[in-house]
Image (cartoon, rainbow, N blue to C red; front, side, top):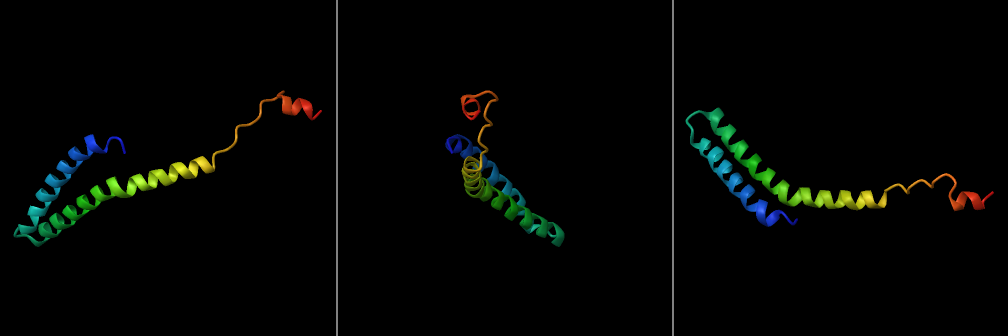
Length: 86
């Protein structure tokens, strides 16, 4: 989240340029190229939303899950707990 103010503006600019560039293909005279441009413009826009909305939420949830399910460190052989049980 700390890199969002610095990196976010660059990623937003590149996303807008790509969406506009592929979106202009919608006006091409060939139907296949029109579909290609529309689909790619939509896909790039959705990838931007995924990058800055969905991915951070998933990463935070994964970090919390890892903290809860982290294995406890194994006790060293010869530690006081094992010596006291003898």
